[in-house]
Image 1 (spheres, rainbow, N blue to C red):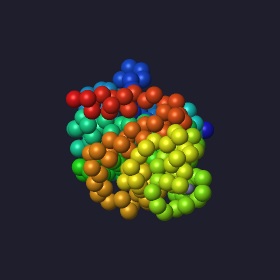
Image 2: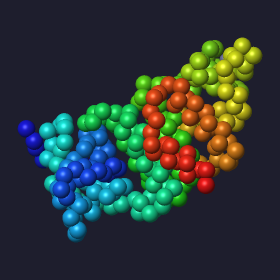
Image 3: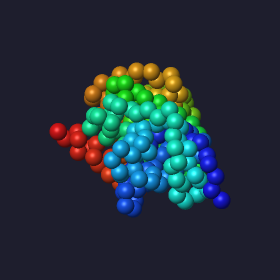
Amino acid sequence: MQELVEVQGIIFKRQRYKESDLLAKIMTKDHGIITMIVKGALKPKSKLGAASLNFSYGKYIIYSSGHGLSTLRTYKEVKQFDQIYLDLEKSAYASFVLDLIDHAFVEYAPIGKYYDLAKFALDHIDRGTDPEVLTQIVQMQLLPAFGVGPQMEACVICGKKQGVFDYSLRYGGIICEDHFASVTDRMHLTAKETALLRTFALLPIERLGNVQVKEQNKKATRKAIDQIYRSSLDLNLKTKKFIDELRLF
Ligand SMILES: [Zn+2]
């Protein structure tokens, strides 16, 4: 049975459905990811269409049975991440962040703190914080949601928490320098780069503020994160390929 539900969320994917209707995906705080039919959205002057543009967020009132397609009925207090919507690079990163979350969860499964993580990242991308750093933070913090929980707190082998570390794909976490000689697959990251990876993974996002990372370090952590993702997940997201292509120009 369908009932009216008010959800708070962010619109992130749209596709044509039938005639002038479209399907829009919304990532919600309490009801997970939902695909909803937006009737008449493609007609000129459609208010529902305007409220369900990508990167719109607010309260949406939907008919839903808790599975399958829901239907957008009306909305209130809808705003848009304007800077993301207008900027190719920002929207590329924001789309990738939301795409990752979309792949980490099935529809209607609560996503809890990951909603706050995505909302935080989008707020800051919109305000002009380095989108790549925010994206790397999301990537690291999202790994446990994919069932990949790299050990970033302490050396995987001896449990040491302070010192100089590197990352090992085989061990699935950080290793301290006592084992640098014996762990042959370590990534050869600098102490600073591993420290950054740990910060990205462990620091509560509300404490990150405006993180500034040198281009060279960012490149190294990007490479490491790409390797962690490639070795443990089979995602191949178009939104990721698009970012990699953007970087070539
Ligand atoms: Zn150790």
